[in-house]
Image (cartoon, rainbow, N blue to C red; front, side, top):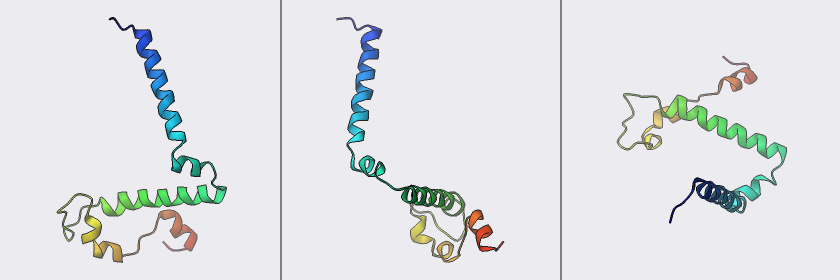
Length: 97
């Protein structure tokens, strides 16, 4: 049996359609379509904050924080967590520098 390239392309298209249909039934995707503008904006702010924290706090190397397990710095980083850090946009809103 010989499989032609058109058969492969048809298979890939059907597979992609099936995956997209399956994803549309997932709970998180149904909820996303029902969110208000305020919820979407809040979700975006939280995601931006988490990304900012990940890049400026948790990925920064420190001699005082051991890294016995990758990704577990939060458990050993009490000194890092106790220092308040703000996103640059928050400082401008609060009038601090």
